[in-house]
Image 1 (cartoon, rainbow, N blue to C red):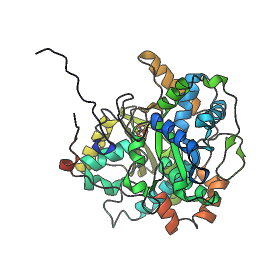
Image 2: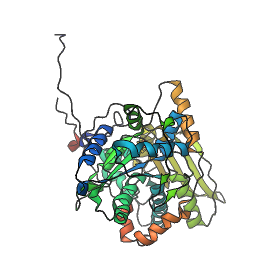
Image 3: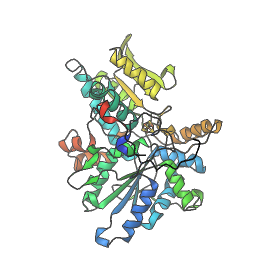
Image 4: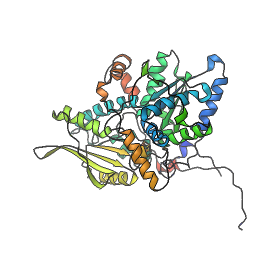
Length: 423
Ligand code: SF4
Protein backbone atom coordinates (compact mmCIF):
# COMPACT_ATOMS: atom_id res chain seq x y z
CA UNK A 1 0.00 0.00 0.00
CA UNK A 2 3.02 2.29 -0.38
CA UNK A 3 3.63 2.60 3.36
CA UNK A 4 7.19 2.23 4.56
CA UNK A 5 7.80 -0.80 6.72
CA UNK A 6 10.91 -1.32 8.79
CA UNK A 7 12.39 -4.77 8.21
CA UNK A 8 14.45 -6.71 10.67
CA UNK A 9 18.20 -6.63 9.95
CA UNK A 10 19.28 -9.49 7.69
CA UNK A 11 22.07 -11.71 8.95
CA UNK A 12 24.14 -13.77 6.56
CA UNK A 13 26.83 -16.15 7.74
CA UNK A 14 29.78 -17.38 5.72
CA UNK A 15 28.10 -20.76 5.28
CA UNK A 16 25.33 -19.12 3.28
CA UNK A 17 27.71 -17.92 0.59
CA UNK A 18 27.25 -19.36 -2.89
CA UNK A 19 30.32 -17.60 -4.28
CA UNK A 20 28.14 -16.28 -7.07
CA UNK A 21 30.63 -13.38 -7.28
CA UNK A 22 27.78 -10.92 -6.77
CA UNK A 23 28.58 -9.92 -3.22
CA UNK A 24 31.79 -11.53 -2.10
CA UNK A 25 33.90 -9.96 -4.81
CA UNK A 26 32.28 -6.53 -4.66
CA UNK A 27 33.43 -4.20 -1.97
CA UNK A 28 30.71 -3.02 0.36
CA UNK A 29 27.99 -5.56 0.54
CA UNK A 30 29.29 -8.54 2.44
CA UNK A 31 27.86 -9.00 5.90
CA UNK A 32 30.07 -11.35 7.80
CA UNK A 33 29.83 -11.42 11.53
CA UNK A 34 33.17 -12.88 12.60
CA UNK A 35 35.58 -11.44 10.09
CA UNK A 36 35.68 -7.67 10.09
CA UNK A 37 37.75 -4.75 11.31
CA UNK A 38 35.02 -4.14 13.92
CA UNK A 39 35.47 -7.67 15.25
CA UNK A 40 39.24 -7.19 15.26
CA UNK A 41 38.95 -4.02 17.39
CA UNK A 42 36.64 -5.88 19.81
CA UNK A 43 39.04 -8.81 20.14
CA UNK A 44 42.04 -6.51 20.67
CA UNK A 45 40.21 -4.61 23.41
CA UNK A 46 39.20 -7.87 25.16
CA UNK A 47 42.74 -9.19 24.84
CA UNK A 48 44.19 -6.09 26.46
CA UNK A 49 41.76 -6.34 29.35
CA UNK A 50 42.40 -10.09 29.90
CA UNK A 51 44.56 -11.45 32.72
CA UNK A 52 48.21 -11.78 31.66
CA UNK A 53 48.13 -15.61 31.51
CA UNK A 54 45.08 -15.48 29.20
CA UNK A 55 46.33 -12.83 26.82
CA UNK A 56 47.05 -13.86 23.27
CA UNK A 57 50.03 -12.99 21.16
CA UNK A 58 48.64 -11.01 18.21
CA UNK A 59 50.21 -11.50 14.77
CA UNK A 60 49.16 -9.64 11.61
CA UNK A 61 50.23 -10.94 8.19
CA UNK A 62 49.93 -8.42 5.36
CA UNK A 63 49.57 -9.45 1.71
CA UNK A 64 51.80 -7.72 -0.86
CA UNK A 65 48.69 -6.84 -2.93
CA UNK A 66 47.18 -4.94 0.01
CA UNK A 67 50.45 -3.14 0.67
CA UNK A 68 50.63 -2.00 -2.98
CA UNK A 69 47.04 -0.73 -2.88
CA UNK A 70 47.69 1.25 0.32
CA UNK A 71 50.96 2.62 -1.09
CA UNK A 72 49.19 3.86 -4.23
CA UNK A 73 46.40 5.48 -2.21
CA UNK A 74 48.77 7.15 0.28
CA UNK A 75 51.29 8.08 -2.42
CA UNK A 76 54.14 6.33 -0.63
CA UNK A 77 56.83 3.84 -1.66
CA UNK A 78 56.31 0.16 -0.86
CA UNK A 79 59.02 -0.10 1.78
CA UNK A 80 57.84 3.10 3.46
CA UNK A 81 54.26 1.80 3.42
CA UNK A 82 55.31 -1.50 4.98
CA UNK A 83 57.31 0.27 7.71
CA UNK A 84 54.56 2.77 8.52
CA UNK A 85 51.87 0.11 8.41
CA UNK A 86 53.88 -1.93 10.90
CA UNK A 87 53.86 1.03 13.31
CA UNK A 88 50.14 1.66 12.79
CA UNK A 89 49.11 -1.97 13.18
CA UNK A 90 51.28 -2.47 16.27
CA UNK A 91 49.61 0.58 17.79
CA UNK A 92 46.11 -0.88 17.31
CA UNK A 93 44.77 -1.51 20.79
CA UNK A 94 48.45 -1.43 21.80
CA UNK A 95 48.51 -5.21 21.65
CA UNK A 96 49.64 -6.28 18.16
CA UNK A 97 53.02 -7.91 18.63
CA UNK A 98 54.29 -8.97 15.19
CA UNK A 99 53.59 -7.87 11.62
CA UNK A 100 54.67 -10.27 8.86
CA UNK A 101 54.54 -10.29 5.07
CA UNK A 102 52.77 -13.12 3.23
CA UNK A 103 55.35 -12.93 0.43
CA UNK A 104 57.31 -15.21 2.75
CA UNK A 105 54.62 -17.91 2.87
CA UNK A 106 54.07 -17.56 -0.89
CA UNK A 107 57.55 -19.05 -1.37
CA UNK A 108 56.20 -22.31 0.03
CA UNK A 109 53.03 -22.19 -2.09
CA UNK A 110 55.11 -21.66 -5.23
CA UNK A 111 57.62 -24.40 -4.44
CA UNK A 112 54.94 -26.95 -3.55
CA UNK A 113 52.92 -26.07 -6.69
CA UNK A 114 56.04 -26.57 -8.84
CA UNK A 115 56.71 -30.00 -7.37
CA UNK A 116 53.07 -31.03 -7.51
CA UNK A 117 52.87 -30.12 -11.21
CA UNK A 118 55.90 -32.21 -12.10
CA UNK A 119 54.46 -35.23 -10.22
CA UNK A 120 51.10 -34.84 -11.95
CA UNK A 121 52.75 -34.47 -15.38
CA UNK A 122 54.71 -37.66 -14.83
CA UNK A 123 51.62 -39.68 -13.95
CA UNK A 124 49.31 -38.30 -16.66
CA UNK A 125 49.31 -41.59 -18.62
CA UNK A 126 47.85 -43.59 -15.74
CA UNK A 127 45.74 -40.82 -14.16
CA UNK A 128 43.40 -39.01 -16.56
CA UNK A 129 42.56 -36.39 -13.93
CA UNK A 130 46.17 -35.45 -13.18
CA UNK A 131 46.14 -32.73 -15.88
CA UNK A 132 45.31 -30.00 -16.38
CA UNK A 133 46.36 -28.89 -12.93
CA UNK A 134 44.31 -25.86 -11.88
CA UNK A 135 45.55 -23.20 -9.47
CA UNK A 136 44.36 -23.29 -5.86
CA UNK A 137 45.33 -19.88 -4.46
CA UNK A 138 42.01 -18.13 -5.21
CA UNK A 139 39.20 -19.04 -2.79
CA UNK A 140 36.58 -17.35 -5.02
CA UNK A 141 37.39 -19.87 -7.74
CA UNK A 142 37.61 -22.80 -5.29
CA UNK A 143 34.23 -21.99 -3.76
CA UNK A 144 32.66 -21.73 -7.23
CA UNK A 145 34.26 -25.01 -8.36
CA UNK A 146 33.12 -26.89 -5.27
CA UNK A 147 29.58 -25.58 -5.36
CA UNK A 148 28.91 -25.74 -9.09
CA UNK A 149 31.15 -28.42 -10.65
CA UNK A 150 31.96 -30.52 -7.59
CA UNK A 151 33.64 -33.85 -8.12
CA UNK A 152 34.31 -33.21 -11.82
CA UNK A 153 36.71 -30.30 -11.26
CA UNK A 154 38.10 -31.02 -7.79
CA UNK A 155 40.66 -33.68 -8.85
CA UNK A 156 42.22 -31.11 -11.17
CA UNK A 157 42.73 -28.47 -8.47
CA UNK A 158 46.20 -28.29 -6.98
CA UNK A 159 46.23 -29.44 -3.35
CA UNK A 160 48.81 -26.80 -2.41
CA UNK A 161 47.56 -24.31 0.18
CA UNK A 162 47.29 -20.63 -0.75
CA UNK A 163 49.86 -18.16 0.66
CA UNK A 164 47.32 -17.05 3.30
CA UNK A 165 46.77 -20.57 4.56
CA UNK A 166 50.47 -21.48 4.43
CA UNK A 167 51.01 -18.39 6.58
CA UNK A 168 48.37 -19.81 8.92
CA UNK A 169 50.34 -23.05 9.21
CA UNK A 170 53.60 -21.17 9.78
CA UNK A 171 52.21 -18.81 12.42
CA UNK A 172 50.19 -21.39 14.39
CA UNK A 173 52.80 -24.10 13.84
CA UNK A 174 56.39 -22.97 13.52
CA UNK A 175 56.06 -19.53 15.11
CA UNK A 176 53.92 -20.80 18.01
CA UNK A 177 56.62 -23.39 18.77
CA UNK A 178 59.31 -20.72 18.70
CA UNK A 179 57.29 -18.62 21.14
CA UNK A 180 56.62 -21.67 23.37
CA UNK A 181 52.89 -21.11 23.01
CA UNK A 182 50.06 -23.46 22.03
CA UNK A 183 48.39 -22.40 18.74
CA UNK A 184 45.27 -21.14 20.50
CA UNK A 185 47.31 -18.55 22.42
CA UNK A 186 48.05 -16.77 19.14
CA UNK A 187 45.48 -14.56 17.43
CA UNK A 188 46.36 -14.41 13.74
CA UNK A 189 44.97 -11.68 11.51
CA UNK A 190 45.61 -11.33 7.78
CA UNK A 191 45.21 -8.28 5.54
CA UNK A 192 44.00 -9.40 2.11
CA UNK A 193 42.82 -7.94 -1.22
CA UNK A 194 39.42 -9.67 -1.21
CA UNK A 195 36.47 -10.85 0.86
CA UNK A 196 36.86 -14.38 -0.46
CA UNK A 197 39.88 -14.81 1.80
CA UNK A 198 37.48 -14.57 4.76
CA UNK A 199 35.65 -17.58 3.35
CA UNK A 200 38.92 -19.41 2.90
CA UNK A 201 40.05 -18.81 6.49
CA UNK A 202 36.68 -20.09 7.72
CA UNK A 203 36.92 -23.46 5.96
CA UNK A 204 36.72 -26.40 8.38
CA UNK A 205 39.92 -27.76 6.76
CA UNK A 206 41.84 -24.92 8.40
CA UNK A 207 40.43 -25.44 11.86
CA UNK A 208 42.60 -27.15 14.46
CA UNK A 209 40.24 -29.49 16.36
CA UNK A 210 42.76 -30.30 19.06
CA UNK A 211 43.26 -26.68 20.08
CA UNK A 212 39.91 -25.38 18.81
CA UNK A 213 41.56 -22.61 16.85
CA UNK A 214 41.77 -21.45 13.23
CA UNK A 215 45.05 -21.06 11.34
CA UNK A 216 43.84 -17.56 10.46
CA UNK A 217 41.46 -16.11 13.06
CA UNK A 218 40.40 -12.94 11.31
CA UNK A 219 40.78 -11.56 7.79
CA UNK A 220 40.41 -7.88 7.05
CA UNK A 221 40.55 -6.35 3.60
CA UNK A 222 42.78 -3.53 2.40
CA UNK A 223 39.71 -1.28 2.39
CA UNK A 224 39.09 -2.15 6.04
CA UNK A 225 42.65 -1.08 6.91
CA UNK A 226 41.86 2.27 5.30
CA UNK A 227 38.68 2.42 7.42
CA UNK A 228 40.75 1.68 10.53
CA UNK A 229 43.15 4.51 9.62
CA UNK A 230 40.18 6.86 9.17
CA UNK A 231 38.54 5.63 12.37
CA UNK A 232 41.73 6.37 14.32
CA UNK A 233 42.13 9.72 12.54
CA UNK A 234 45.56 8.70 11.24
CA UNK A 235 47.15 9.51 7.89
CA UNK A 236 49.69 6.81 7.00
CA UNK A 237 52.10 9.45 5.63
CA UNK A 238 52.39 11.00 9.12
CA UNK A 239 53.17 7.72 10.89
CA UNK A 240 56.78 7.02 11.89
CA UNK A 241 58.35 3.97 10.24
CA UNK A 242 59.23 0.81 12.23
CA UNK A 243 61.67 -1.95 11.33
CA UNK A 244 60.01 -4.87 9.53
CA UNK A 245 59.56 -8.13 11.43
CA UNK A 246 60.92 -11.41 10.19
CA UNK A 247 59.50 -14.76 11.31
CA UNK A 248 62.93 -16.23 11.90
CA UNK A 249 63.96 -13.36 14.15
CA UNK A 250 65.85 -10.13 13.49
CA UNK A 251 64.57 -7.36 11.29
CA UNK A 252 63.92 -7.72 7.57
CA UNK A 253 65.81 -4.99 5.75
CA UNK A 254 64.10 -4.99 2.39
CA UNK A 255 61.02 -6.23 0.61
CA UNK A 256 61.11 -8.68 -2.22
CA UNK A 257 58.52 -10.18 -4.54
CA UNK A 258 58.09 -12.94 -7.11
CA UNK A 259 57.97 -12.46 -10.85
CA UNK A 260 54.85 -13.26 -12.81
CA UNK A 261 52.22 -10.66 -11.97
CA UNK A 262 50.00 -9.53 -9.13
CA UNK A 263 48.27 -12.86 -8.48
CA UNK A 264 51.41 -14.53 -7.19
CA UNK A 265 53.23 -15.69 -10.33
CA UNK A 266 52.12 -19.32 -10.12
CA UNK A 267 52.04 -19.84 -13.90
CA UNK A 268 55.54 -18.49 -14.48
CA UNK A 269 57.16 -20.35 -11.59
CA UNK A 270 55.59 -23.67 -12.49
CA UNK A 271 56.36 -23.16 -16.20
CA UNK A 272 60.08 -22.48 -15.78
CA UNK A 273 60.47 -25.21 -13.17
CA UNK A 274 58.66 -27.79 -15.33
CA UNK A 275 60.64 -26.77 -18.44
CA UNK A 276 63.85 -27.41 -16.52
CA UNK A 277 62.83 -30.56 -14.65
CA UNK A 278 60.88 -32.30 -17.40
CA UNK A 279 62.63 -31.15 -20.59
CA UNK A 280 66.04 -29.87 -19.46
CA UNK A 281 65.29 -26.32 -20.71
CA UNK A 282 67.05 -23.77 -18.49
CA UNK A 283 65.50 -20.29 -18.07
CA UNK A 284 62.56 -20.91 -20.43
CA UNK A 285 61.31 -17.57 -21.74
CA UNK A 286 57.68 -16.68 -21.25
CA UNK A 287 55.63 -15.01 -23.98
CA UNK A 288 51.95 -14.50 -23.24
CA UNK A 289 49.60 -14.88 -26.20
CA UNK A 290 46.25 -13.16 -25.59
CA UNK A 291 43.23 -15.26 -26.57
CA UNK A 292 39.70 -13.86 -26.23
CA UNK A 293 40.78 -10.97 -23.99
CA UNK A 294 43.70 -9.85 -21.82
CA UNK A 295 42.42 -12.01 -18.96
CA UNK A 296 42.71 -15.22 -20.97
CA UNK A 297 46.24 -15.76 -22.26
CA UNK A 298 48.40 -18.75 -23.00
CA UNK A 299 52.07 -19.65 -22.90
CA UNK A 300 53.77 -22.56 -24.69
CA UNK A 301 57.12 -24.30 -24.62
CA UNK A 302 57.93 -25.79 -28.01
CA UNK A 303 60.76 -27.87 -29.44
CA UNK A 304 61.06 -28.75 -33.14
CA UNK A 305 57.47 -27.65 -33.71
CA UNK A 306 56.17 -29.88 -30.90
CA UNK A 307 54.33 -28.33 -27.96
CA UNK A 308 55.91 -29.59 -24.75
CA UNK A 309 54.10 -27.38 -22.25
CA UNK A 310 50.84 -25.51 -22.77
CA UNK A 311 49.80 -23.18 -19.94
CA UNK A 312 47.10 -20.53 -19.64
CA UNK A 313 45.83 -17.91 -17.25
CA UNK A 314 42.08 -17.42 -16.91
CA UNK A 315 40.95 -14.47 -14.78
CA UNK A 316 37.35 -13.48 -14.06
CA UNK A 317 34.23 -15.66 -14.07
CA UNK A 318 33.55 -15.15 -17.79
CA UNK A 319 36.86 -16.80 -18.66
CA UNK A 320 36.51 -19.39 -15.90
CA UNK A 321 33.18 -20.50 -17.35
CA UNK A 322 34.81 -20.83 -20.77
CA UNK A 323 37.58 -22.92 -19.28
CA UNK A 324 35.14 -25.18 -17.42
CA UNK A 325 33.13 -25.74 -20.62
CA UNK A 326 36.31 -26.72 -22.45
CA UNK A 327 37.14 -29.17 -19.68
CA UNK A 328 33.67 -30.68 -19.69
CA UNK A 329 33.78 -31.20 -23.45
CA UNK A 330 37.19 -32.85 -23.15
CA UNK A 331 38.67 -30.02 -25.23
CA UNK A 332 40.95 -28.32 -22.74
CA UNK A 333 44.44 -28.31 -24.28
CA UNK A 334 46.27 -27.01 -21.22
CA UNK A 335 48.62 -28.67 -18.78
CA UNK A 336 48.20 -25.93 -16.18
CA UNK A 337 45.84 -22.98 -15.74
CA UNK A 338 46.31 -20.10 -13.30
CA UNK A 339 42.66 -19.48 -12.43
CA UNK A 340 41.68 -16.32 -10.57
CA UNK A 341 38.14 -15.09 -9.92
CA UNK A 342 38.82 -11.36 -10.28
CA UNK A 343 39.26 -9.74 -13.70
CA UNK A 344 42.90 -8.51 -13.79
CA UNK A 345 43.71 -10.77 -10.81
CA UNK A 346 44.43 -10.08 -7.15
CA UNK A 347 45.63 -6.48 -7.48
CA UNK A 348 42.06 -5.74 -8.57
CA UNK A 349 40.47 -7.77 -5.75
CA UNK A 350 37.09 -6.73 -4.35
CA UNK A 351 38.65 -5.69 -1.04
CA UNK A 352 41.22 -3.32 -2.53
CA UNK A 353 40.90 0.45 -2.22
CA UNK A 354 39.10 1.72 -5.28
CA UNK A 355 38.04 4.93 -6.93
CA UNK A 356 35.01 5.13 -9.19
CA UNK A 357 35.10 5.47 -13.00
CA UNK A 358 38.15 6.35 -15.08
CA UNK A 359 40.36 7.14 -12.10
CA UNK A 360 39.92 3.56 -10.97
CA UNK A 361 41.77 2.31 -14.08
CA UNK A 362 44.64 4.69 -13.44
CA UNK A 363 44.75 3.71 -9.81
CA UNK A 364 44.95 0.01 -10.74
CA UNK A 365 47.80 0.77 -13.17
CA UNK A 366 49.62 2.62 -10.41
CA UNK A 367 49.11 -0.34 -8.02
CA UNK A 368 50.46 -2.68 -10.73
CA UNK A 369 53.49 -0.45 -11.34
CA UNK A 370 54.29 -0.27 -7.63
CA UNK A 371 53.76 -3.99 -7.11
CA UNK A 372 56.12 -4.81 -10.00
CA UNK A 373 58.85 -2.47 -8.78
CA UNK A 374 60.35 -4.82 -6.16
CA UNK A 375 63.29 -7.14 -6.63
CA UNK A 376 61.96 -10.57 -7.63
CA UNK A 377 63.43 -13.51 -5.75
CA UNK A 378 63.41 -17.20 -6.61
CA UNK A 379 61.74 -19.19 -3.83
CA UNK A 380 64.42 -21.91 -4.15
CA UNK A 381 67.07 -19.39 -3.15
CA UNK A 382 65.42 -18.07 0.00
CA UNK A 383 67.66 -19.17 2.88
CA UNK A 384 64.94 -18.90 5.54
CA UNK A 385 62.57 -21.05 3.47
CA UNK A 386 65.26 -23.71 3.03
CA UNK A 387 65.91 -23.68 6.75
CA UNK A 388 62.26 -24.23 7.58
CA UNK A 389 61.97 -27.09 5.07
CA UNK A 390 65.03 -28.72 6.56
CA UNK A 391 64.56 -28.17 10.28
CA UNK A 392 60.84 -27.64 10.87
CA UNK A 393 59.16 -29.62 8.11
CA UNK A 394 61.69 -32.44 8.04
CA UNK A 395 62.52 -32.13 4.33
CA UNK A 396 60.70 -32.01 0.99
CA UNK A 397 57.65 -34.22 0.77
CA UNK A 398 57.72 -35.19 4.46
CA UNK A 399 54.45 -36.03 6.23
CA UNK A 400 54.72 -32.75 8.12
CA UNK A 401 55.20 -30.76 4.89
CA UNK A 402 52.16 -32.48 3.42
CA UNK A 403 50.04 -31.62 6.43
CA UNK A 404 51.29 -28.01 6.73
CA UNK A 405 51.31 -27.08 3.04
CA UNK A 406 48.51 -29.08 1.38
CA UNK A 407 44.75 -29.28 1.74
CA UNK A 408 41.68 -30.92 0.23
CA UNK A 409 38.42 -29.83 -1.40
CA UNK A 410 34.84 -30.96 -1.06
CA UNK A 411 32.06 -31.22 -3.61
CA UNK A 412 28.98 -29.43 -2.33
CA UNK A 413 25.56 -30.61 -3.48
CA UNK A 414 23.63 -27.68 -4.98
CA UNK A 415 20.45 -28.51 -3.07
CA UNK A 416 22.23 -28.23 0.27
CA UNK A 417 23.69 -24.85 -0.51
CA UNK A 418 20.38 -23.00 -0.57
CA UNK A 419 20.66 -19.51 0.90
CA UNK A 420 18.84 -19.15 4.17
CA UNK A 421 18.20 -15.62 5.26
CA UNK A 422 16.05 -14.81 8.27
CA UNK A 423 14.23 -11.55 7.59
FE1 SF4 B 1 40.81 -12.86 -4.02
FE2 SF4 B 1 40.27 -11.99 -6.47
FE3 SF4 B 1 42.75 -12.80 -5.86
FE4 SF4 B 1 40.78 -14.56 -6.06
S1 SF4 B 1 41.61 -13.29 -7.71
S2 SF4 B 1 42.33 -14.47 -4.41
S3 SF4 B 1 39.02 -13.42 -5.27
S4 SF4 B 1 41.68 -11.05 -5.02
